[in-house]
Image 1: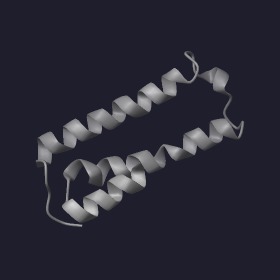
Image 2: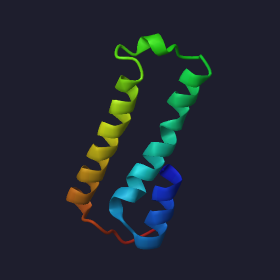
Image 3: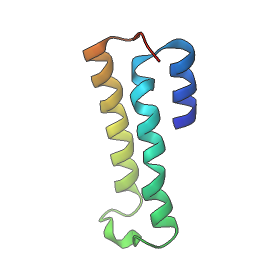
Image 4: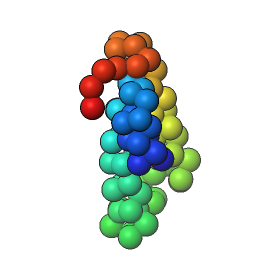
Length: 77
């Protein structure tokens, strides 16, 4: 999803894609750490729902916030 956002940002210039793309790519690291057993899943109080809810909520806030501040389309690469 992060790669798709970055490609979309390059093609159409959508503001939120310029921010959510790197965010979603950065969220791969914690998921891999839980999957590799470096961070125990028991640290999450609600199991898998808590981290996924956080990622989804932060992505939605990023989408809403960036387009509200800078507009739907931004100029630049």
